[in-house]
Image (cartoon, rainbow, N blue to C red; front, side):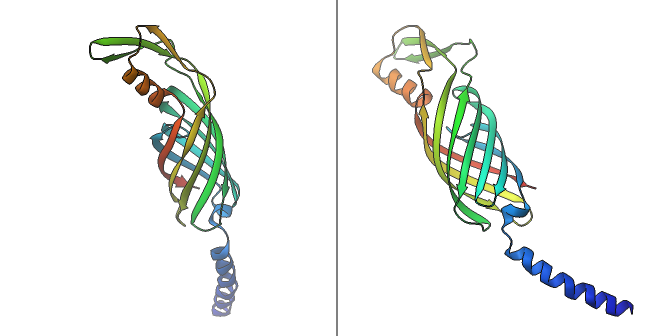
Length: 186
């Protein structure tokens, strides 16, 4: 009788295991945490929390440090597939807190400019890829563009040279997004 019960249990379990293999990974593993490093990424150098609402739709929240100061971000992602590797399109908003009343000095050829970074917002559009392993390991990479919504640089003293202005525009303005992340999805 014990062996019949064991055989019956195994036979009933095998079809359910096969069904889970066909089930999208993001349906079973819904909540993730990732450490991100990047340029104009959701959190800059920080932490992202991901929630897979359904396998094809994910929400990301990020917090971290960046060249524009501490920042918080939120993004929605349309996942273009349901496998472990999924390309996606995303759009979100980022709030950068600036230098929090601190100043930054830039020097070039004997000329010095002192500036303050003011709080500002960015709108981000990205495409990327995310891998969620069956065991939970998660890897992500994305690229795109972050659009600054309002001026965030206030010149406190000095006049920037043409080269300084280019550095200011690249470092603190709208620009490319490049980010990598590693983490775990529960």
